[in-house]
Image (cartoon, rainbow, N blue to C red; front, side, top):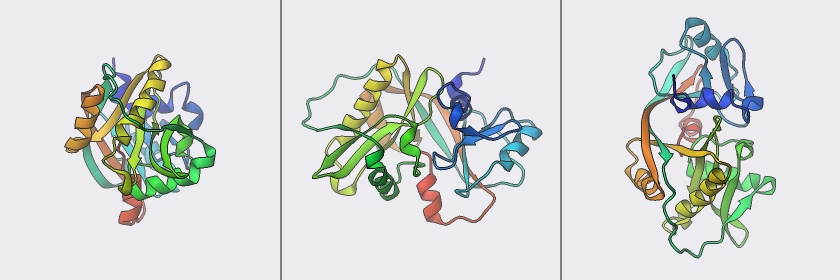
Length: 241
């Protein structure tokens, strides 16, 4: 039997929590526009791949993440391909004492969250992405300096994502502390935390290992489009933790 994390996007879009955010038909689904660009087909049949190709692309692209390499849907062009390391939490490592004030983020912080994600490019982040799950942040004088939150939610699992810090606030331990806050919330619900990182991002993977994550699988990421995009458009939407 296929593990749900072998097809994390499809597993999330057909899960109890995120099926209401899925749009599509004919064997292919994507996150509703404004939430993200992740998409998946039910299987690699020509009919399902055609349905994937037909999904709306108001952002100009779709992103797929699969353990198995699948054919490129007809009519779509590969903007980028990359290997991701999928990591799952085994045991949350003990916390190091840190004087970091962490607070939950909500609708009032939406504009600041989008601005920080646009600046730092942690992965696909749009005007409604913050509604995919719990987010936490660090502020200074009301200014959002760093954040982390949740993204894909297959049944029994939650992805840690949106981890980023303003260039002026890096090196202060915010990423690890915020990820810990997100992970503790996931574990309290009885779920397993997981995430994705570019396989060659040694610094990020070292941080994730220090929190208790271990590499589960190598994943294939593709950015697909049927239109013209700028490099800025692509950078904002690249999948990552």
